[in-house]
Image (cartoon, rainbow, N blue to C red; front, side, top):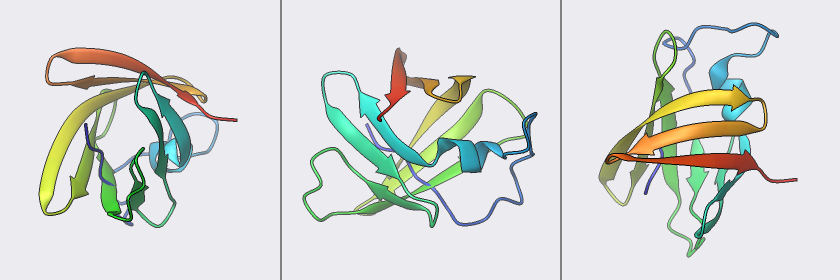
Amino acid sequence: FIISCGDSTEDVKSTAGGKSPQEKIVGEWELPGIGTMTLESDGTFIPPDDDGERGKWELLGDGEPFKLIITQEGDSDTANMTFISDDEIEVEFRGRKDILKRKG
């Protein structure tokens, strides 16, 4: 599955703790059974296979679940995303829910 990010935070509201959801999601995340994906602060998405085909990510919405959009090689996919904690997120994509944990 794919995730996308832009470099604008104007559509995302800040949450308790001072960090916006866009700031909280930046980092390396373990995808169950797939590997590690990276969401960089400049909106770059690095897929688990890191074959050089980087993409973009974008997080939209005024509240949870947020819309996480990943664009890679011209294709975009959207997932519903909810923060469980600063180090865990739940992502629902095509009817399947997964818990992603921050790596490190």
